[in-house]
Amino acid sequence: MSFFAATSGTYGDATATFSSTQAWVFTTDLDPAEWSSIPHAGYDPREFQPDTTTATSTLNEGDVIDLGDRTFEVLHVPGHSPWSIGLWDESTGVLFSVDAVYDGPLLDQLPGSNVESYLATMQRLRDMPVEVVHGGHDLSFGRDRLRELSDNYISSRS
Image (cartoon, rainbow, N blue to C red; front, side, top):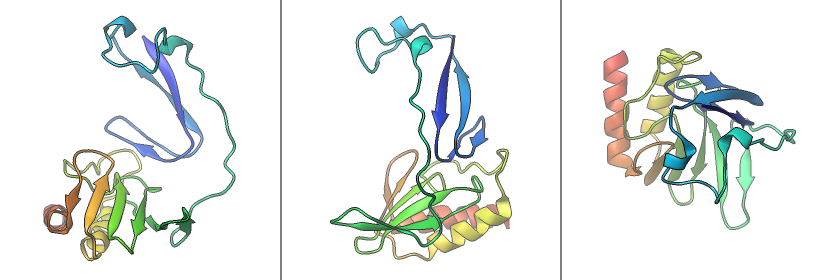
């Protein structure tokens, strides 16, 4: 069985990397009746049709997203993918690193990945005054673990 999904942002994983407004098809042998979690009773992924939308703006390095009670600075953190971004809340030391860094194997051999860019990103993140990192995968972690992950990556690729 296959089902369709789309993204209007950046996505990268072990199978592919996509830029804005691209779509892909997932294939699985699992019968939806065997799934442990579904969005609602009667959900059938074969019938799923995502809503389309048009981007109203783009995000660039240094842009600020103001949520009213907190702000995030947009960081361009390429390496895993050329379009990767992170969100940095300097007032709390919180970094949403998405796929740039997480507490698991860092993927830099995907289509669009670039080890040289990833090395620069890891050095940049290592030197930030981070309190907590929320990556796109695995558990959140603190500054010491960020430095350890960064140092390990840098030493393994330099």
